[in-house]
Length: 114
Length: 112
Image (cartoon, rainbow over all chains, first blue to last red; front, top):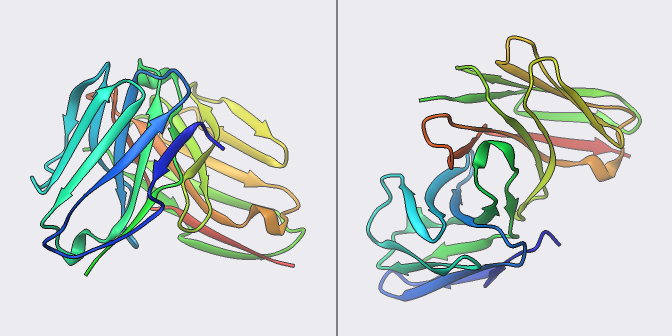
């Protein structure tokens, strides 16, 4: 138990569906992150929210839309995904400034797009 | 952009054997993190190194950051099946202090 909870753990969705991934942290951190982990690729940073403002958006397609309503919650809204978007999506949180503090990860959501 | 390369990509060892995993950066490291991941699950933080020459230990796992600060090694002594998993090194980017990027990982299998 890392203090970062992701739901759902598994998700299967069609290419025309709309779904959302949820992440919640109980650590009092002020930064939250979305990562994508595909087979045989390094973890890819998708979005970073620091003090509830988006500070990183690494060329992620618009079919992924993040939302951070407060410092404890982070969502990733999904729509019209492609099969290549199937991956493990990991949420993390940390206390900024980043260089001095480690990030804690959730268990991930295994997403399959059919 | 800065890249992290891990070696080996996979490792199979007999229980009780020692092993070392390396992480090499293309640029100077300003914070090096080691994580462990069970297949299909989240990352568990192991330790963080910030100063060249720094060495930290947690149970039977020791990590070092070399003095030139471009390489780190993770050493496991007397490996056990519970050590099996994917080991990932991560580093913070100076250009984006909120950016934590990772190597491709080393998959460790420990045979009882």
